[in-house]
Image (cartoon, rainbow over all chains, first blue to last red; front, side, top):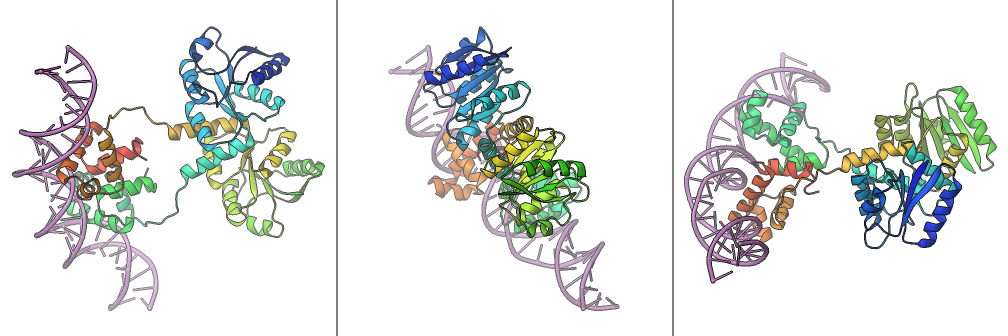
Amino acid sequence: MIKIAIFDDHQHRREALKLLIGLEKEMQCVGDYENCENVVEHLSTNVPDVVLMDIDMPKVNGINGVKLIKKNFPHTCIIMQTVFEDDEKIFNSILAGADGYMLKKTPPEKLIEGIYDVMNGGAPMTATVAKRVLELFQKQNFQPEEKFDLSERELEILRLLVKGLSHKMIAPELKISVYTVNNHIKNIYQKLHVHSVSEAVSTALQKRIVK
Amino acid sequence: MIKIAIFDDHQHRREALKLLIGLEKEMQCVGDYENCENVVEHLSTNVPDVVLMDIDMPKVNGINGVKLIKKNFPHTCIIMQTVFEDDEKIFNSILAGADGYMLKKTPPEKLIEGIYDVMNGGAPMTATVAKRVLELFQKQNFQPEEKFDLSERELEILRLLVKGLSHKMIAPELKISVYTVNNHIKNIYQKLHVHSVSEAVSTALQKRIVK
DNA sequence: CTTACAATAGCTAAAACAGGCTATTGTAAT
DNA sequence: ATTACAATAGCCTGTTTTAGCTATTGTAAG
């Protein structure tokens, strides 16, 4: 029996969801609430397996609700529900620990399917939401194919600079004189179009030249 | 009419997919290939709207296939197909520009649904794959709640350091003396447990103290 | 009204760095 | 064999940065 709790500020929708869940033999609704005030107390008497969480609720919104639930009941799965696909909300929901994200216009049978999905360790997502996630992901990991043409030695030194080593510390590390280190660093500056270690480190990290 | 091309090294599966697509009135198969050699030539005569792409194929694999297709036919949507959910492959597929990711065991009607989804700008994903994506995303954006307790002024200066400004350049920027700048920087060093601008920049970026 | 503490501001000496030089080595093209 | 070029290696000097001081301001607690 899958125990489900509902959070939504519209009573009408709560009733509809309860009805829908009631139709499933394997599911039961163990609570419905109009916002996330006192979430933890509400849920602790009968911890649900799945929470259907509206994002836009007064007082404590759904995203904070997710944080609270995940902190106190880490095994409870949470499916976010919202009217629009909004990058900001999707992003924050995922970071808060949401396990699924479905638009409210999703047909009832899909929602039920989604509940079974989370119970099986999946993350049901409306395709348009998933698209946003992929785009965010791509954007975050995009690396401009900029060719800085650093030599192997220069890369090695750049990595040490990023680790926080000074000229003086790098020299013994690579068993060369600080003069040579200095020279490599100068060449790095030219290639990265910078004029200091800190700029080089900043560029190296931001352009993902080193991790 | 949705034009679909199939890439899969198993003839049996290609035939099955062709049959499936043939059953849909709105879809037609415009080509099926056992690997991604000469993808561009193959597709250029009759550019498909959707590509069903097996990941594991000999010679040119699916991920490189995606890159080639996206480069040459950016409007063609690609749904990846694979037997296992494997983080590495999911990650690389997304970066290559895949628009969907469905396990091969997905029932036929779901696959057809997925094709309609991509055509509508969505990203159909098997729930277990979506779960992996969410987890990757969370991991990447996780920020250790480390409290460095930098003052507003210190944060301001740290941001300028990350932008590559030196002590000397920061002073006029904030209309204070370089002595003061130096002092703030010293305090930043203490709080971040570092001893140079470059280390501070490195820490600031890696611990996401500034973006 | 003190007291305590953090943020802000300033000075100086010693250490580290940036940038202008030259030299050697290896490799590829003429 | 010669030339060209890039990577590597080294040296020197003027400037910047680091870190050890002190001082002022604002604010919260006793």
